[in-house]
Amino acid sequence: MTSAPEVLLSVTMLRPDEKLLLSALREEGLNARPLLAADLAEVVAGVKPPPAFAMIRNLSHRDAVGVARRLECTGVTTLNRADAIETCNDKGLQALLFARHSIAHPVSRHAFSYDQVRTTVAELGLPAVIKPVSGSWGRGVTKVTDPDSVEAWVGGRESADAGGKLFPVLVQEYIDKPGHDLRVVVVGRTPVVAIQRVSDHWRTNTHLGARVERLEITGRIEKLCGQVVDALGEGFYGIDLIEDLSTGELLVLEVNANPEFARSSAVHGVNVAGHLAAYIAQLCTDTPLPAAA
Image (cartoon, rainbow, N blue to C red; front, top):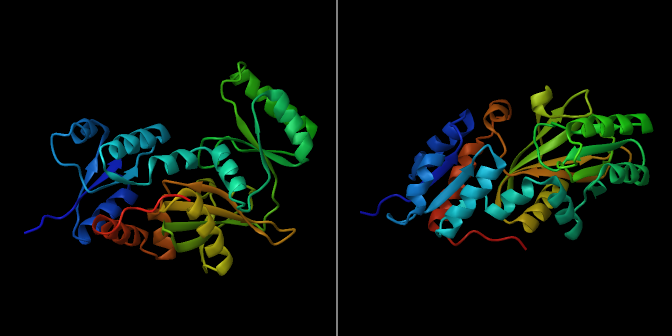
């Protein structure tokens, strides 16, 4: 009798998302178990045959990349891949990748000093957005609307980081949007659900109070998401899109390689964990995971 493929779920802690995913993986007939940091040494020691697959859900960006790289070096297929996780953890790398692959994206520039922030904001025009290259939930993202607010950002940042160790930052054109942005959850290369995150605030993160509304997946959405997957490789992504109110153009804002889904699934009704588990089950018995273009 053939044993079920072993699937590791690398986690910092078991949140509702990971609990749903573990149940869905087991329903697919897979031998799924959590992998904590303390368990990794035994897995990579080579004493036992490597697992068939590992899903990377660590909360720390550094831990996620580190675990994925170590598992990949032992021959384990990971979702997402270390390279994709690393790119998704750095908004600056994403901006460069989007530009290279001609993916519609707000005009974005790296700044490596306070003077470069001032110069780049002047070049892009006001208002503009200054954001750390790493971070989530909208933390540290600042809209500057006039020269005084630029100087206020510089002064506040210098007081906490006089040596400039937290550079680079990304300076981005401000996109006036129609009161919402879009989050598309992609499994493999298939968009399984799209939601609007609606808020009166210019930042529309659900952690900041935005409400979730399900949205039809249009051809425009499919095309943009397909371009992102072509650039990053197949995976599990939360792709954030934004509509330019002045032109109607749809732009890719950023990509999350560890999207949360439990809370929003309760609203939109799509079984994201089930879609993801079915995809993983297919990969465990199918061809190797396709890489980026």
